Structures are given as structure tokens and as C-alpha cells.
Length: 338
Image (cartoon, rainbow, N blue to C red; front, side):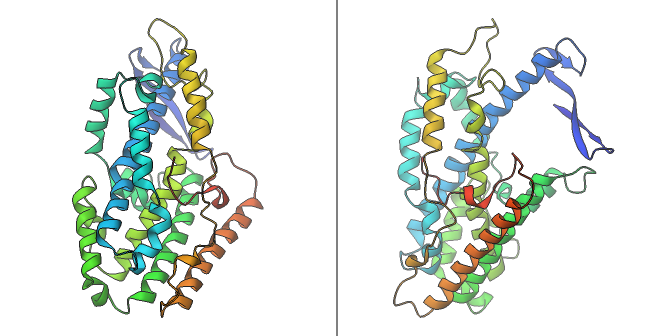
């Protein structure tokens, strides 16, 4: 799909879609159908590739496993990350068994056969880029910075990420007085090594200058963003639109058949499952700091400052016009449990 910048409005407009219909442009007899095909492809990509494969299988599961394997329960970074990994492995296993099996939700709802879905997952898993969890770096990687058009969602995501980074940095600086101290922490070294070896294409490139307080803080912020903002964008939020199958179809038939009722019921079930309230990000997690921790007061203050930052942004955005694309802090959940 090809977009062109409209400098007068500061937006991008679709000008061409290439599909099995050939090349379609606005005004062509095939344009409306081509748009529906593009929406179908987008919803397949977001649901299967960006959401389940990218968030659940390629990154969040490895975070949960590596943190349990390498950071002892009383390690300060484990305490910080615990809300973000709670029950992740159990959740992933349950969802995989129900949705990826032959005849499960994925090959019954989306546009792939079971074999095609498995090939899709295998092919896109190895293409995963962890950098998607850093809005500014991701925008630079995709070439949309200073593209000559407005990026309101991108601007919002950068504001959210900055709150995560400030929080992670404040917390890390409480427990590590120097870069040398954190670089010499064997548990942190093992944690990063396991993450680098398990997440497709690794994470050490993201660390740039090695293990420092700043690089580890940014890494932690990326994981927090992954579990909360990224997951809701491509997961729960997306499913608010999945039931509009006549407008944003999850599969389309060459013979013109409508989506079967069974597939629609599966969409209803999944939508319910994904929108059951989970632990909100805007919550008090100070009980995770050990009572005998000599840094307890400082750590709790860092957690409180984090919550204040989220509340301040929530207040600021709620005073502005409501936007359907805006990821309000109050909507975010602290883990990815189904």
C-alpha cells in the first residue's frame, strides 16, 4: 500500500494498493474492494505477527523466563519487573494450546490454513526487531522522523516511553552507584546474555556501549513499554474493531462467501477474553519492595513518582479533546495475561 504526504493537511493519504486485483488507485472500480483487502491483511498482520508472535512469543515470554532464571526473587531488578512478567509463561502456554492448534482460533478466524499460519509464524519470528519497543528508535528505523506529516500517535508514544525511562533510570540509580557496579553484577550479566540469546536478533545491539546504568534503564523501559503500551496497541485495543468484520474483515473468500458464524463467535469470545480487566499499570506496587531493603524508602519514592507521572499525563490528556487513537495511561495494564 502506497501513501503520499499531503503537505496542506499534514497527513498521509493512500494513493495505491497492489493486491490480487492488480494495482488499484482512488477512483478505480476495484478501489473499495482493494481497501478491504488491505484492511484484512493489516488485521492479520497486527493480530498474528505483531501481537501474538511479536509480543507474546518473541519477547515477553523470554523476558519472563530470563528474569526467573537469572535474577533471584530478591534481586532489585526482579522486584521491579515482577508485575510485568507475572504469570506470563502460564498465559502463553494456555493461549498457544487453544489458538495455535489445528482447528483452533487462528486458522479458523484469520486468512491462513494451519500450515500457512505455522509458516507465517516461523518466517516472521526470526524477523522480529526488539527496537519496536522504543518509539523514537523505531521511528528512526522506519524513516518516519521529520517525514513532513503530523505524527500525533508517535508523539504520544514518545511521551509514555519517557515516563518509563525516567522511572527505570531513577530506580536503577538507587541500587547502583556507578556504571562499574552494575556492569560487574553477575546476575545482570547473565540476564542480558540469556535475553540476547533468546529474543530473535538479540538485544545487545540495543545496549550500544555495553552494560551501564543508562543502557540497562533503557532496556528495562523498553520491556515495560512492550508489556503495557505495545501489547495494548496490537492486542486489546485492536480487538475493539475486530467485531466489525463487515468493515475490517479477518478473512475474505474468493467466492464472495461471508465469514461463518463460528468464526464470528470466536471473535466475540476472544474480544471478551482480551478485555477482562487486569491489573492496571496505574497501581501501587510498593509492597514488592522488601521490608528489610535498606533502599526501601528511596525505591518506594521512585514508584510513587512513576505513578504521579502517569497520573499527570492522564490528567493532561483528559483535558484535551478525546482521540480514538490515544493510549491513555489509565487504560494500560501491567501484564499480558489473557
